Length: 379
View 1: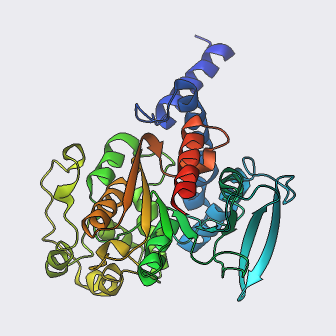
View 2: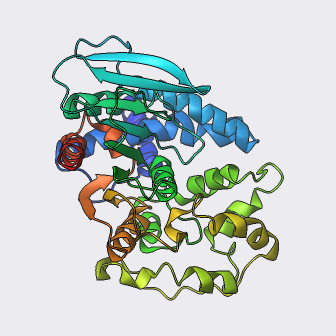
């Protein structure tokens, strides 16, 4: 029997939907309309770089460069195209050879402090341009000077009223900088921070595999791949290291015992604890010896810093639908235990990278307003 074109098109659509559909979890964003928006955007991300990158390029570094280019292109649609702003002076300058973007309110500055913002991107992707919309809105909300990436403070900024802020990998950098400058009485803001690399089987990682596997949101494999690149591993020659890390086989039993004195995942809220019995007896000697200097280094993994006393007042923002949720909570707990004034803000409908959608999602806009108000109340 001859099949009609409408029936064939319907069959192809249904087949494609069943093959490529990846539902986002319930509770993802604040409303059904926002859920639909993120469903569409996730689909775009998957088909623009998640699927094409490994098909077009065999070399992980070529895949990375492709991802960077596509990421910049996609975010250009939600970021302002011009540096001109009627409310802000915006300028790209060099400080000690480092490119930074400075935002100065034209009118009604709230105080003489500043926000130094470190963007996220797992240490290997991301740019000032990608976070242009976020940093510009921070300057508008707080009426403070905002400096994106790295910045040596200008003389007209009060050096005792500095907030360092970052998301994801940038949040990890904030933690490292604050630990080095612990005697300064400023403030630090960490938004879904990346602060450890020795345990990739926390309950938030398990949640991803259970509820979000296959989506374009931050996933364990991409994080492991990028973190290994950050550590200087040649993935073209040692891509098998990624699976070793994902199975927690990059840490020897002795090293794990030493790490556990700083990090106790059983202190997480009961709903976030891993229910299955995880064994870490198996490990790869070569990879564990290679990674040990990094996972024990607080500059690389701030969560393992043995002494957190004397750090500045802190805001840590975590999201429910994020593989980095648990380590952010643990870092907040450790700071509180060390006597650091710490505010932990959890977003039950949030996800990793949320702030980049503040012009589209009320969930993200409300989070950015909360962060801005916290800064104004603490500097």
